[in-house]
Image 1 (tube, one colour):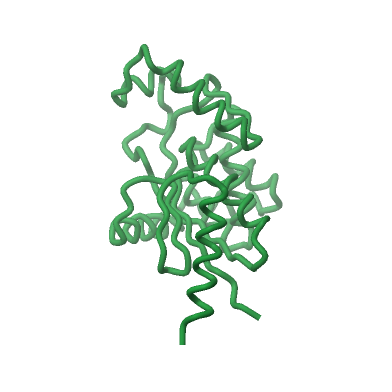
Image 2: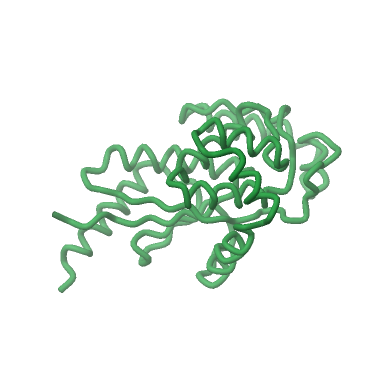
Length: 216
């Protein structure tokens, strides 16, 4: 029996294309007739964002250099693509924030066997539910919702227990040349950047399996 294909995924909780890419990749895995093992890695797109950003989603994009007159059309386009993969983005309900603590929580969840569930819950929180993903109280509540111990989660977040793990992920991303997310690495051999179509991910999975089978 062929060994599972390991896929390492760098992404940010507050990245709209990362959630779209996640759904497209998941569809490829569902269609693939082999085993795939997934591990998520941290990447902060905007580490200088305050936890309690005082403005709206629109204000935030303007502050990052996006032309104000283009934001509506840009959001509509991305929302339409999100809808095509079953996601329902509500940009006006977004709470722009630094995602460091969210990434720490994902590492805490990984240590407790719930990484995939935590990643999914946090992305739903930011893009679909209008929940805050930067504040410890909100993060602890979400951890409890997926079956993690809230007291342990709070202790880890308040102590920064997994902060070094987040930075280690980011350092590896730099070393392998990641310039944007999502970024997928298949069996530590093939890198794929961006929210590619499901067919592309499926093709890569097939190619990686074929290469592994042909290896001496």
